[in-house]
Figure (cartoon, rainbow, N blue to C red):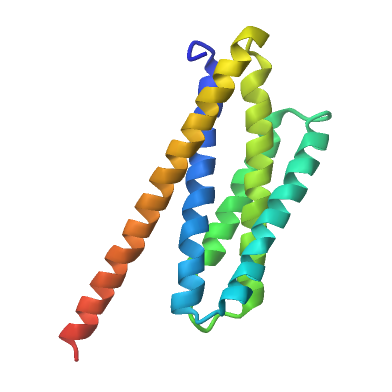
Length: 172
């Protein structure tokens, strides 16, 4: 399966999709609850929009793939995730809930527009006899990327919290 160029490219893209998806899935609830004082239920409702965006975009991208190649859809997904990350980079404890919901919804759209076309393009040129092996490899890569994404992003959060706490303690 690794001799197929499209599958390997799709595997790399899928790694980054899973890295982003699961990394932010672990990071955002902590930020919303600890830094922004969101109650647990409100955090859940806010994060629900990522799933809604992913579901709608996955269905829509499946429909659009009958008319367009996967590349423009993947580019649309990258743009949506970029916009989402740009909005999320600017949130503060005073930020209203609507921009956060909008950013999370766009993140879901981006993941949906990236994952469905990427997986379809990855398996399109594989011979049918290799598809079960490719599905196993793709699933393993997703699991590894999820673990790496959660580990790196939570480690960064903890490190930055410690740095900020140390800076505050120096000035007390």
